Length: 569
Ligand code: HAS
View (spheres, rainbow, N blue to C red):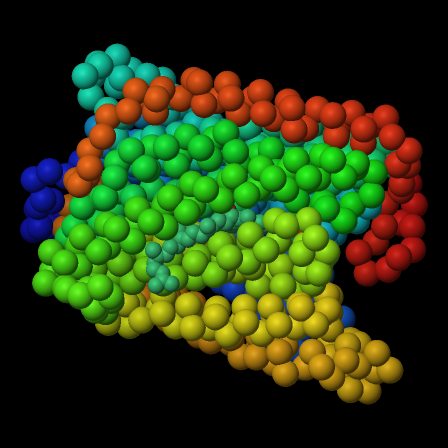
C-alpha cells in the first residue's frame, strides 16, 4: 500500500534485482559503519604523535593496535568493499546486465567473515602488525586467514563480470565497451594480478608461520611479495576514482569528457605499469641489488604518465563545462564551476580530491627518485604523501559515491544537503594542514609509525625533539579538522540512511558524452595489455625474487610488536 505512493524512477534508469541490490547495499553500508573505528584511530594517531598523549595505550587500545585498525579498516576494508559494490553497479548499469545474486552473496559472505575474523584479531590485540603485515611482527592466524578470505571474496565478482562483458561484446560487436566498464575491469585486472603474490605470502609464509608449523620467516621475501602486491594496490584504489573523473565528473558539471581515448589509454597503461614498480618501497632494504631498484624507480616515473594524462584531460573537461556555463578568460572560467551546489555534491567530493591529488602526485614523484627517497623514506613525509592520494581523490570520491548510491538504491532523499557539500572542503582543508605539518617534520627527520608521545614529543623525555613539535601540532590540528569533517559526513550518512523511503529504488549514473570520441583499435581489447603486463612482471620481478630466495638473507623467528624481544618459534 505504502509502496504505491512512492515516486516513480526516471525513464532511463536501470534497476537491480532485489537480492543483488541488497548485496550491494551491504557492501556499501558495512564498511561505512566500520569507518567510525578507522577514523577514530586516525584521530588517536595525531594525538599520540603531537605529544598530546604520553602513553602506550588509550582507552585500552594500544598505539600499534590502533594504527593497524586505522590502516586495515580505512585502506583495505573500506576500499575493497566499496570497489566491489561500485564494480557491480557500473557493470550492471552500463551493460544493462544482471548477475546470479547467489554468487554475489558468496563473495559478500567471504568478505564479511574475513573482515570479522581480522577485526576480532585486531581488537583483541593479537594482530598489531600494521596494514603491511610486516614480519617478523607476528599476528594470530585469524588475522591472516581473515585477510585472505577478504581478498578471495573480492576475486569472485571479477570472474562474474568477465563472462558478462564477453557476452555483451559478442552481442554488440559494433559498439565500444562503455568507458566505465573498461575502467572497472582494468581495476580488478590490476587487483587480481596484484593479489597473486600476496596469496603466496599468506598461504606459504605467514599462515603456516603463525600456526607454528614453520619456526621462522624470510622477511625480505615477505616484504618483496607484499610490495609486489602493495603498489598495484594503490592503483586498485585509484582507478575507480578515475572512472568517476572520466565518466561521471564531466556529466555532473554539465560538460563533456575531453577525450574518450585518453581514458581508455590511461586504464590500459595502468594494467601494464601498476605492478613492476614495487621495489620503490624497498629502496632502503638490504638483500636486493640496486640495479633492480633503478629499474623499478624508472618504471615508477612511467606509471605517473597515465595520471598526468588524467590531470590534463580532467582539467580540459572542466574548462569545457565551465565555459558552457558562461565562464570566460584564461583562468576566470574556474569561477564558473558548481563548487557549493548541494544538488551536485558529487562535484565537491571529486574536485576536493583532485586538488589534493595534485600534491599527492608531486610528492609521489619525489619519493620515486632513488636519491631523494633516502631523505624521506620512513619519515612522516610518507603518510603526508599517501593521505593526499588515498585520503584525497580515492577516499573523497568513494565517500561521495557511497552517499549517491545509497540514496538511489534505498529510494531515500539525501538529507542535510547543505552540510554535506561542505564535508569534502573541510576534509581537504584539514588534510592540507595535516600533510603540510607531516611533510615538514618528515624533512626534519621525524619518523613515521612511531608513538612520539612516549619520547620525541614528550618534554620530560631525554629524547625530546623540540624542532618537530610545531609541525606535529599542525598535523594534529589538521587531523582534528579531518575528524570534524567525518563527523559531519556520518551525520549526513546516518540521517539519510534512517530517513523514510520516498521513491522506488533505481540506478542512474551520470555519464558524460565525449568531446573527442576517438575509436582506437589499440584499446579495444584487454588481451595485449594483460600479456604485456605479464611479460614486464616477469622481467621486473623474476631476477630480484630469485636473488632474495637464493641470497644470504636469513629467515628469523617472530617478534612482538611492542618489544624487540624474540617471541619464540
Ligand atoms: Fe605513492 C608510498 C610513489 C601515487 C599511496 N604511496 C606510498 C604509500 C602509499 C601510497 C599508501 O616511489 C605508503 C606505503 C607504505 O605504507 O609504506 N606514489 C608514487 C608515485 C605516484 C604515487 C610516483 N601513491 C600514489 C597513489 C596512491 C599512493 C595514487 C594511493 C591511491 N609512493 C611512491 C613511492 C613510495 C610511495 C616511491 C614509497 C616511499 C617510501 O620510501 O616508503 C604516482 O602515481 C603519482 C602520479 C600522480 C600525478 C598527479 C596527477 C594529478 C591529478 C589531479 C589534477 C587536478 C585537477 C584539479 C585537474 C602525476 C590527476 C585542479 C587542481 C588544482 C590544484 C587547481
